[in-house]
Length: 359
Image (cartoon, rainbow, N blue to C red):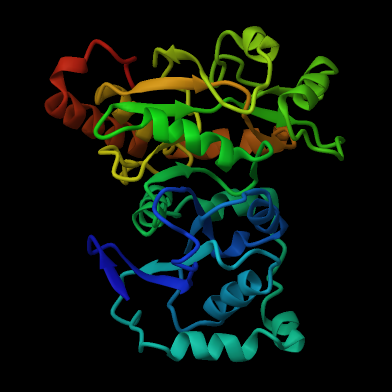
């Protein structure tokens, strides 16, 4: 077990990728999840991404519990290319969370073939949407993201969420562009357009032509359609109209002028900006990384042709519950944001007027 900033302990590589396959010059998909969200979406995410993956799983419990075994077995029994996937377990930093090398993995392996064990111990109670969201509030989301990133093994990364999927040959195509543009200590990042696809669609778009057909029929939208200004990226018609060539190009460099914009980013693993760990779900936890990158003077380069999508529009009940939780957490968020703004103003005074005000 490795201590992380006296807050958490993590067990790296409970499932480990093959070092001979995951060489440095690739793009790792960096994922995070809590142990009670291991489901079919994770399996689909594994299947969709054709490259290295670093997944961090957070447990609010002690390591010596059935939850650890269940999570290990649920992931181990999924259908994925184990050569590319590394999985790390994260726990609260309590004295009881100690680990004797080898014991955990041996026990887990001996249990994973037992369907009776899995059925009797690993089918948790089905939670309501409100219970799921409430349960996720104590989840240290940005710390878990940062540990998954820290334990990735490649030069380039894209930090994402389970349930977001990529157009065909995404890693192969973007890797060449990353090698060309993200050189040395350059302050550049590749920003990817993201869309939402309606639930009723059975065949997901593999390329821009298929996405455009769905877009014209209003089965696909810019992410999030209920907040048109949040994730909107201009010049979309131009992006769709440009011929989809195998060799990717940059459409344009977008000014970071919208504090709500949270584009998926391909960047170097040693990028000096990390997720701000004081931010809590669901209040701007993901935006904090982009805010810091803006203050560090990064260029956000919109990539042609490739894209990311999420299937299913957010339900009204989910939006209501999230608004309720945000309102309850507002006093705490105001303090966190005030501290964050003071810190970045002190660290990066020259870019204070360059970026939108974060509030």
